[in-house]
Image (cartoon, rainbow, N blue to C red):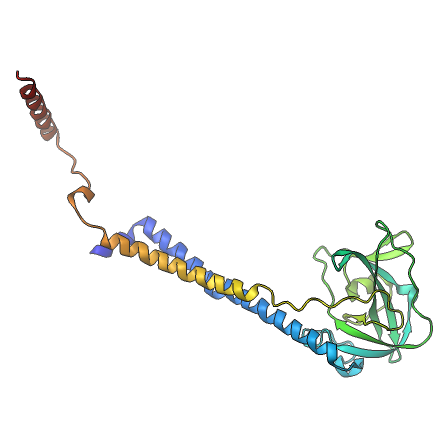
Length: 274
């Protein structure tokens, strides 16, 4: 049977490895990249809509205590209330437009009693310190902001005190609420330009599709190439000519080896003319 060579351990290991790699390409790696591409497209669509859509009251977009999700993120909302400067916290180690920045987070109590974490925008640090910046306005104001989902700090670092300010490593309403003692509703809200209390308004992310779709196609291509390669190796093995040179030499017996030595000696003697 010509396919018997496939039962050799080396071939079995190679085939299993190729099948595993191709399976990962088709069922895990490529779908993951397609998913990332869909998320990016959804985010781009949401940002594009927010550029032209009129802001809506917060209660119409997010019911009380509802957590922002990908369907509501970037939506512009309006809310009326007053800032709570005693809960103000600064976001540490940020970057805006490629340069170091500090984001100023100030709780905002609405007329409905909810407290929002409002990102008033950014200021540029002086070394590693916060510069002087305008305080949040006193009294009741109406603000327009974009809904944002809470960030996640994989190290779960708490709020800390430094140089007279409260600092956080992530813009996360739960972390800031725990550190400031001010209960906050989920998510945070980034002020748009021209709003009461805004500092340097945060720019929107660039609308880029990213490389995810091409990466997904590459993983599919890698899986196909791996299967094609193993098919080529099997075909090459089947097509190899079966000549005497390809066969493993037969081991001589002792008598045959002695006879072969004697034959060679006679031939050498004859060649010397003895």
